[in-house]
Length: 45
Image 1 (cartoon, one colour):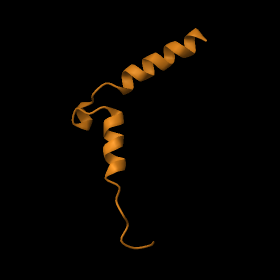
Image 2 (cartoon, one colour):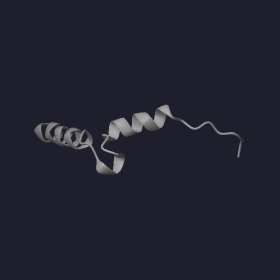
Image 3 (cartoon, helix red, strand yellow):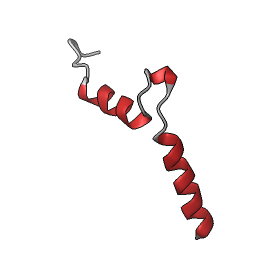
Image 4 (tube, helix red, strand yellow):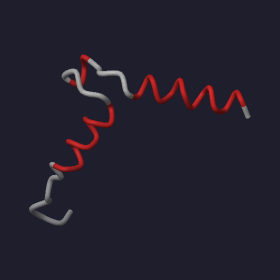
């Protein structure tokens, strides 16, 4: 159980770290921005 909690902690720390490749946003911020700017298709494929 301790190892699972520690791995969750490490994953959380890494995912909350701002990334230069994402214009210094966290992964969560970039995902929220992507989902809020959803592209509406103009035609059906």
